[in-house]
Every structure is written in structure tokens, then in C-alpha cells.
Image 1 (cartoon, rainbow, N blue to C red):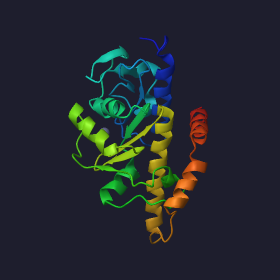
Image 2: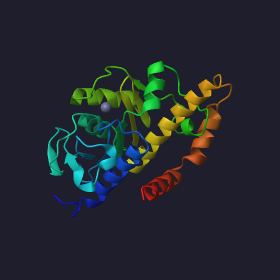
Image 3: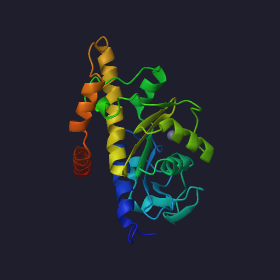
Length: 234
Ligand SMILES: [Zn+2]
């Protein structure tokens, strides 16, 4: 299967997103995946399993239905956690992109049970409200039921912690969800650094966080960040 044809553009976006996430050290060896909603409503475009995020080319991407059937694209193995993507898309018509990674600092923060604090700009992309936490299982999301349950935990938010497992970020498109995944990891890392200096003594309150979100993380700005990240791939 080549990357030509009507699906070429969407497969290229999944490839770019994967390589950006891999380059940002969100790849946990061969684990983690991002998806884009199929414009014809057939499911999600997602990388095949068995390869790392950093090595995903457009021809290693395929279309997976909500039932887990590979409908088009790469004939490589399908990720077992596809229901994360298909069930969130089903529950959230506004979502066009979903990222799931094992983002290390975000996992640590969620496992510590502490709130995400806006100690820098990054957390204001999410807080307020607090990032919800999915605690039904720390194991893989392997069934449609667990996917739907995760989607319920996510609610209307743009991110959810899968406690003792990883993160999910969502956006109107995969580009936004990808930048959000990077921001969530940055936010957790900066909070940890703050702890090393004795802990946060100040952070943005809700009013300031919302104001910062509007000006710093507008849809236009997030698109510009994506363009920069793509250029940086070289
Ligand atoms: Zn996972």
C-alpha cells in the first residue's frame, strides 16, 4: 500500500504527529499512538503497532473501525488500545484528534495524586478545571467498554490522566492534540522542578490561567506551534 490517494494527507498528519511525539521523548519504546478522525466517519487513522512513534511514516498508518477492523492503509498489526481513540471520538463529536502516550512526568504527577498547578504557562492550557483522572484500571484499554468509560472520565476536558499508565489529550484536530500532549508533559515537568526548589509558593489563579489560555494558547497560536514542530523535524 502506498501513501498516495485520498487518504495521503491524513496519513501524513498522523506520521508527522507521531514523529513529533517521538522526538519529544513521549515515545515509550514502541508504545503510544495518536489518531485523526476519518472524514468519512469510518473510524480513526492511527499508526500500526510494533514500531516506535519516531519511525512512523505515512505508509505505516491505517484506518481502524470502532469494531477494531483495519479498513484501509497499512496491513501491519493494529494497536490493541484502539478503543481509546474510537470511543472518545464517538463520545465527543467536537474531537478530531486523540493522542495517547506514556508521557513520563505527567504519569509521575498523576501517580503522586497531586493537582496540576499552573506554575508556568503550560498548565494554563488545561487548568482550570483540574485534569480529570481515570482510575478504573491502570492496565491497557482493550475493550470498547473501557474506552467508553475513559471517554466519560475525560468529559468535556482536553486531557485526562490514565493513572499508573499514561495520558490522553484531545483537540479539534490531531495537530492540536499533539501540541497539547507536549504542553501537559512540560507542565508536569516544570511542577516537578519547582518541587526541587522547595515547592511552589505562587501560581496563576483561575482568572489569570484563563486569561493566559486565551492569549497564549489560542487556536491560531497552537497551529503556529504545530507548524514550528513540523519544521523542526527537518
Ligand atoms: Zn497505553
